Length: 507
Image (cartoon, rainbow, N blue to C red; front, top):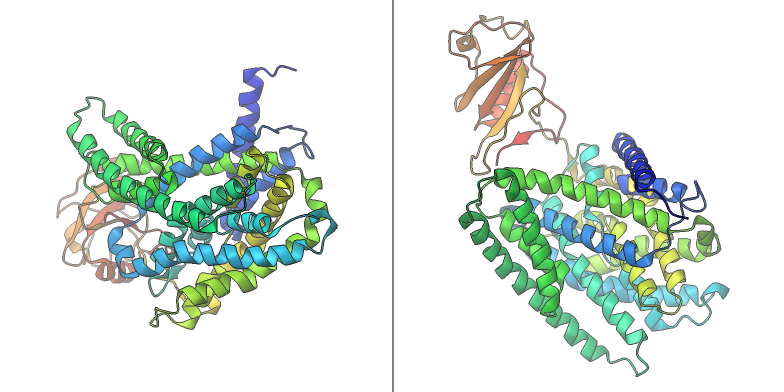
């Protein structure tokens, strides 16, 4: 039966709207948005509202493009200055940590599935493939929860986890592809050759990402485009080119696109702010589309037979294989405390990436591919429920979370500044207490290196002078280089600071 394009678009818009509402609710209650997006897709699928979606190739294409955009955006948002002190730990976790997790989990899966009728005939290599698809973590879910709970992590944990989460997907992908190739060949597996290919893809991908990223920056800065709105599209084009070009030179495109984003995001280029904002929206759009697609692809009734082995595998990963991998990988870093390692272990959150990688065996007709997909999907749900809803509580319990004093984010002033300006913008609301020392702008005891640049009154904006008379409920746009002094001043004036993680830094 043919479906009219209008009906298809109507259905997609409704699903998107429901997913956005689910994501908003997730932020409020500390539930990962991914879990709710997947739930919307599952409830709308063949076992729910009756939407039948069985096209593995389309799902693979959507997942590949979406993951490419998400990794590129993550690289652009990562500051090299922040990750430099912990780059060694992050790289070790993203490579050896993933490999160790895959091996330990694969052996555990082989043992668990060997005791179930549904898994009869599952060998060690297939078990390692299943584990490889689940060996990477999901940064988007982790930090959406931490930020919704308004937490800052101590000891450089946040940049380290961002680096690991953003750069460990390539390793998991290479392991998955390599094991699929081994399973689909009749000859005995040559693990040394597979290891050499894995290393070569990582090297080529890393070098290609760096060089193409530098080339992209030069192109963006030297290509004079009259229409400034095309610059974000140009950056997007560079993203897709880096990923696809690396594939043709036998490198890992996922690693290349992440490093390319890292290089571009930490360079100076024209219309950088608009490009960053564009990719923030693109990343969320990609996640939403990807999660909905994956939710539609699964049949919930097929998850029932694998509940018991799925639960055993999930808890083995959460409490044994992931922690063991983290503690072993972090042995050389003696300055890293036990609590830090314990929290990093708990942040081994499964997300959309394992489900995308689980589609690959389906596309390649690997034996037991559907069983692999269902177990990965089930383990992802368990991880999101158990770890995703408790991340902020775990950080607080381990004493690794802090509530920093932050300034109010911009609501009434729609302004953007260059990343090169090392200042912070905020806005204050004038109260009766603020006017106690006088109603002129010069009477406000603003600290040094702080400037009031604009006032909003009755939906009208104007630039104030020192003798400008301020009224109660006026909104004043502030730029400061002295963050802590301004917070103290605002508290003295009776202007409330905002909740954590809502500052508007320009740097």
